[in-house]
Image (cartoon, rainbow, N blue to C red):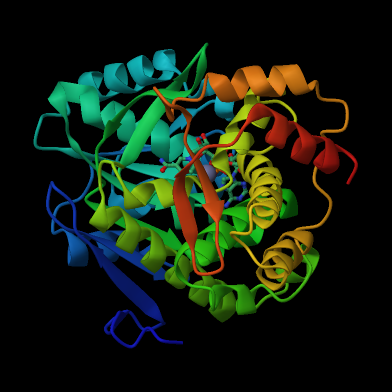
Length: 371
Ligand SMILES: NC(=O)c1ccc[n+]([C@@H]2O[C@H](COP(=O)([O-])OP(=O)(O)OC[C@H]3O[C@@H](n4cnc5c(N)ncnc54)[C@H](O)[C@@H]3O)[C@@H](O)[C@H]2O)c1
Ligand SMILES: [Zn+2]
């Protein structure tokens, strides 16, 4: 792999460090195997100061959270309820209350270990507790490793939509232990791979070569394959975010597949589709839109389609009402005065700020419903 510039010595196994810069200063993303038992050592090496509280959820805490707390010598890991429905204000209040009770000050830090729901919620609570304390992200889903834990976006959902309250609050360290993926359900793995495909399309097509098998076969993949896939995806995301932290330009590329994706999640009340699955449907839609407009050649389109097909069948959207989906798109927070800004794939990368008419999308949506 091409990571000789990032490989870190002294960890007795392959560990890569990707440096990310942000308006709050730089931070490291450490990727490796069996890092949790040595989390104290990793944090000492990278930061010198240990977080004083560990937060996870009821699923991840028994698997990894309590082990992380032990390795760091903190009180037992706080266990949040599991699920997107708990990425809400009351959880933020619970977290802040617990930190206050524990006597956490402005100079202390906390550690979030779990999927994107945990890292988004804890990162946001860290952003607002005492007007902002530092936090460490330990993502344990593929999606959180390559996407949610990187880039500083934190937040919670409102009744009216996802991620409508949030803060740009970068972690001071990200530790991705590839070994934790061994317990991740196959469906979650496939959902994470959808974001990997998106990332590959935006910034490193060679990642697609690693995606050469059906998703079930990934469960048997050597950790080295996962390691490479994750490191390369993170490198792309870090690069994109560094050029445009506040999403005024190039960072919008990361929304590829997300306009329809978010709308499908909303139209199914966040119950049917995992985020990555909705993104996979969204990627199929933009592939078709871009091909119809001549932005994407048939060959490039086929490459994207083939990668998505390897994810296996997605939950059906055949029964979804077009009007509900359209309504959700119009409410998209990426909407500006001109309508909804779409990101479409091109042969070389993506085209930003594209306008798509309702009629055009309706046709593509009807096509998708029949697949
Ligand atoms: N901040 C960002 O830039 C950003 C980017 C993408 C997605 N997100 C957010 O991330 C969230 C989705 O994240 P996700 O896909 O990680 O979902 P998730 O956090 O809900 O995790 C998926 C499921 O896997 C479980 N789990 C986590 N790690 C596990 C492991 N190693 N073994 C077994 N089970 C495990 C979780 O408890 C949960 O049940 C959404 O809320 C989305 O909005 C944020
Ligand atoms: Zn996403």
